[in-house]
Length: 346
Image (cartoon, rainbow, N blue to C red; front, side):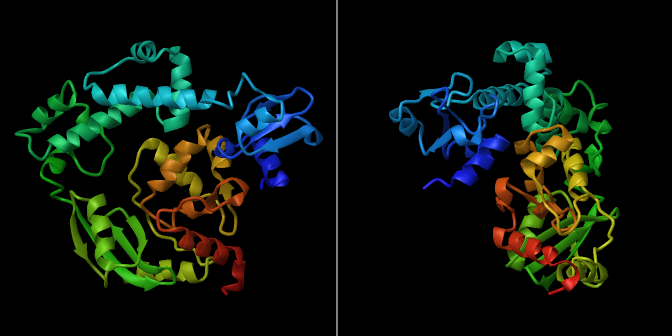
């Protein structure tokens, strides 16, 4: 059974996450819409809610032409076009201009640029550059030279590959990370097992889990090009600082971070660090503050390599729903509950 107050709040928020859960009908116009419909919000006392579009039709209402509650919404249609644009960029090694891409997709260049960035957090050019870097990474280990790998990946020369802000040079990456050693350590904590890894610049991974071997494998998959060296003694003080924050959130661990991600991911992770302990933000709120889309923010949160210190657990869904957390909703709930207790330390 639908909860009126819950549905009304989703309608007020125009929350697309509820588009497949119910429709609302306006009695004065006899039209039914999706919760995310951009039309003017109706009066609360003039609205009815239905579980399906068929139920609304059976009650004598007709579908809104603006939000198409019986088919793909305009937002979903744009989603599909952006996915198609991503595929085109992925499949072509040579550069594609925005005008060329827009002509293939069937949108104006400006409309495509806005839709693409709001959904991926990147411009089409940045997306293509990222895919080109990925192709470079796969070719470097087996290539005879950096130049050969660059040309096969779609670069015109080696100049572009050396302009990357990654920690390792292309030559180092071709040698499978020779020159970078990451130290790591593990310890029991209130949330199970805790693994941290550090480069010369700072903490580059903070992972939670229940099995040492699985945690080590996750670390190796994240940093396959690096040499991993266990260092319990050297990282002991950092482990204790992090465990101290888990036990008493007001004792925030002040540790240097070495965050590796795209420019957009870095912006999201920086915004996460501005959320005080004991408070939360909705994905939509965070996206609005960054001028982006909730889905792009959610993907950046899911890619966060440093749990707790980059507090992606403080981002929640509509109606404060816990939604996803890469280390499990039980851990997310425990973190939020402890932080919500403030200075009690209970």
